[in-house]
Each structure stands twice: as structure tokens, then as C-alpha cells.
Length: 393
Image (cartoon, rainbow, N blue to C red; front, side):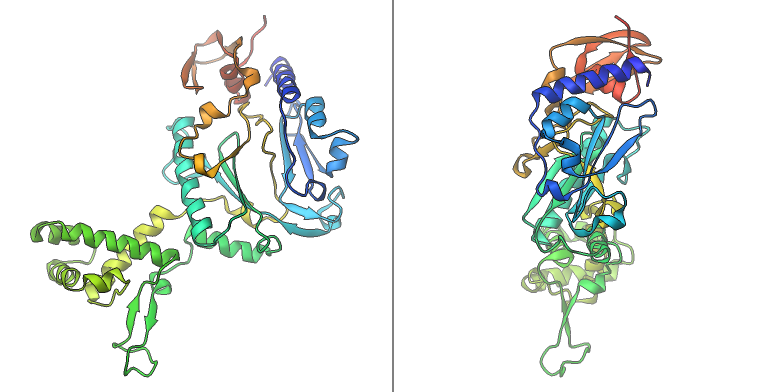
């Protein structure tokens, strides 16, 4: 990025911050703060500041309008002395539990082939799965959802029960969300039936309890059985034989078990027939693949992590880092709803060394090789991402 482009972006970021109202996170005085400047290298990080170091005698808005940073961060951790020059001197107290989803790291996403908008749509699906896990499996209720302004989403959990968790405990949460190390036999509940004297035996009943990965597998099995029972027998048999290890004999046995034990299966009993147990195991693998959330593991386990400040601008896109209402996520469009108003209503000229397309604000802007005139927000996006530079007037 050349000097003219950096100066333009820094100036317009300052214009935005003079108009914007940005609030600090809870316990702002206990957190470390950091920011990246518009230096030639683009990666100069200024950190180990307390909130007071950052704002001096003013407030957060004064700092943002005056410094006009490229990126702004605060720590998940809370400290006795957040402005100390080393982590060991800060005196850790607690940390938010933070989850990060990056669109270009998702399974099945190809950053070379998929557009920015396509990747973000995939990432929103992953976010919805993550929130389902956090709400229903962990019963977290003090959660803040944020669009990062760049590649994806952040979720901050501030329930009292998580703030003092160790890195090891946070790692266990990560493993659960990712489905790492979870085996089918681990989620099955074994209940001794009358006469088995509490010992595991062929008489013991294995079932899928409600809740968690067992509950999700139980729901998938129930819907699969409903699907089978709406088919004629030949089609149902063929459907069952699509599963590895299920031949004609097992398929017929499983179909009969589904017909004759519908109520028990709905209650989670997978021991009505060995074939049904095998099918439940196979369905479990599909549930894990479809319903886990591919979070960035180090972010969640790092109790000292710096994370983007909601309300600030992302220096790699010019878009807002935005708080999101979980009830409005379905309708949220990051390529429309995070464009700063300061950058709307003006056209600017930019120079591109090769043709590029910017899809933003519900429009598609084609930047030809050379100088183009585009909506300012599209030009800022292209410049921030390194696809264009500011043309001379």
C-alpha cells in the first residue's frame, strides 16, 4: 500500500470516528488494549496499554478520532495491571470465553475459487451451529455476537462460570464444539434391566439420552425412521443398503425393527435390533460432520487473546466490526449492513493494476485495469484489501 492510499484511508477512518459512537466492553479498565497503525509495514502493533493509557483524559471516541488506527483490539483477559509491559506482570484475574470463526478456514471453502460473499455466507451457517451448541449444550446466556468486519464472526461468552476457566478446561470446550475425540459408544447410555444385577450384559439396554450429541443423534435417527416409514419396502431397503456394512439381510431386519418398535426408538432405545444400533452409529458420524462448528481453536484456549473492538473499523476491508442481535442473524448481510455511512454518497477514483470486482452494498463494481471511478465504500474496500490504490485527482 503506497503512502497516498494510507493517508487517504487514515483520514477517512478519522472522519468516520468523529461521527461514530463506539462503546468500550465491560470492565474496560481491567483489559489490555492494542492497535495497529497506518505505518508503511502495515503490521506495527502498539499494545500493553491500559484503557487509561489509551484515552488519557478523554474517552474512547477521542482516541479513535485522534489516532485513526487501522485496527483496534482489547483483551479477553482481565488483569490487576493491564498496562504492564509483560504478560507475567499483568496479574491475570479472568478471561472471557471467546470463539472465532474465519470464513477462509472453513471446511469446503476455497479462498481461491469462492468469492468473499460466498465465504461469508458459509461462515454465517457455521455461526448459527456454534450458537446452537453454546445455548443448548452449555446453557450459556451472557453471549455477545460480533461480525469481525473481515473474515467472519466472534462470540464472547461472559457467564460467571467460565471467566476463571483454565486453558485446559477451555480446551475441553473446544473439543466438544469440534466433536474431537467423541465416539458413539461414549454418548450411549447403558441401563441394566431387571435380572442383570447391574452388570453389563446382553440384557442391558443401550439408548440415546436427550441433550448434547446423543440428543442430536437421537433426533437424526428419529427423522430417518420417519423417512423410511413413508417409503415402500423396496425403496426403504435400498435406502438402508446405502449405508456401509448394511446388506439386504440387515436392511430387512432394520426395517422390521423400525416398524415394530417405533415407540421405543422414539424414546432413544437403539437396542431393539443390532442393525438399528449400527445405523445409529453411522448416523452419529453424519451428525458430527454436519453440526459441529469449525472454530479457530487457539483463540478460545488463549486467556490473553486480543480481539477486535466492536464499533471499530476493520483496516483490511473498511467495514464495521458490528454487534449483532442473535434474533436478527438470519437477515443480517455483512456486505450491506456494515458499510459505514461516512463512506456512502461519494465517488472516488482508484487505480487497479489488474481488473477486479467488488461486491458490496448489493451492487457489483467492476474495476478495470487502470483508473476507475466507484462508490467510495467500494473503493475503500478495494484499497484496504490491496486490490487498488488511491488515484491522483
